[in-house]
Length: 148
Image 1: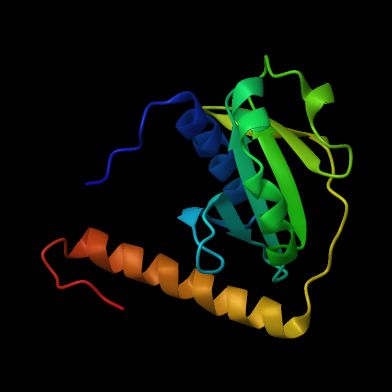
Image 2: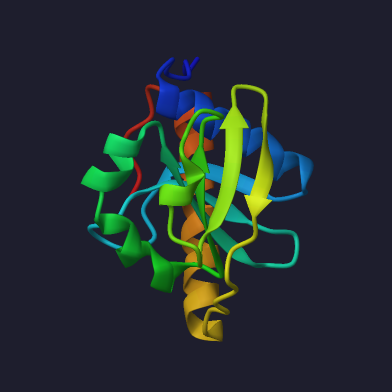
């Protein structure tokens, strides 16, 4: 059985995933929307929208991470998820903000919508579905040979 890490970022991600699930979305942690990219949480909404949530456990973590801009072309909505003590005024104004802990998340600011092109949405939906199915397969049969 997989054990969820007990780090500040992992606790934020856990709360975000609970919030997404409560909203009817299907979250997937540590997802790669394209080669060379890895987002903290991606979610497929009930209407087919794709959200990316980047979890930041501290201001230093946020300032050191410049790769989040590369995630914008891969989602309809981009959010930063932070803990309750995070100085949210340091985050970009166009991006959504979630305040999260182990148990859930609350939206503080909605993201600027960026509708994906239909071809990219289809490719991402397939990639999310395959990634989730392969993870479930590895969970159910840890001794199985790796899948493509």
